[in-house]
Image (cartoon, rainbow, N blue to C red):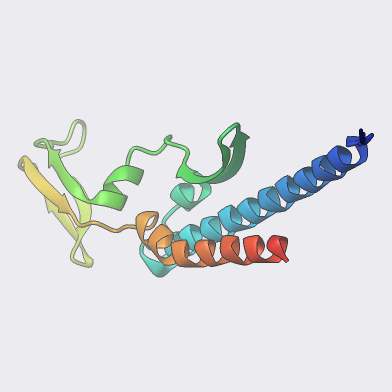
Length: 158
C-alpha cells in the first residue's frame, strides 16, 4: 500500500497571490482605458464636435471603474445635470413657444451675425443635428480597448 502526504497550502497561497496580482493589473488596465476614453470625449467637447461656450458639458463628463462578482466594468458618462447633453449626442427637436417682451418694447437677439430687434418671435421648431461625442468616441476607442485586453491576457499566459 502506498500513501502520499500532499500539502497544498503553499500552492493555494501562490494561486491567491497570482489572482490578486491579475486583478490589480486588470483594474489598472480598465482605469487607464476609461481615462483614455474620457480624454477622447473631452477632446470632442473642446472643438472636435462641439465648440464649447461655458465648458459645462465637458466638465460634467465622468469616468469610473467598478468590480463585482462578474468582473470589471469601465464607464464614461455625463453626470446628467445638463438637460442639453442628450440632445447634443442624439439630435432632436425643440419646440420654442412664442416669445414677447415682458418689460421692454422689443426683443433683441443675435441672428446671422447681426443684431435683430422684433416685437415678438413666433412659436417655432428648432431641429438640432446629432453631434455625437460619446458614441463616436466609444466606437473609435473600442478596438484599442480590445487590443489592450488581448495584450494583457497574452502577457499573463506567458
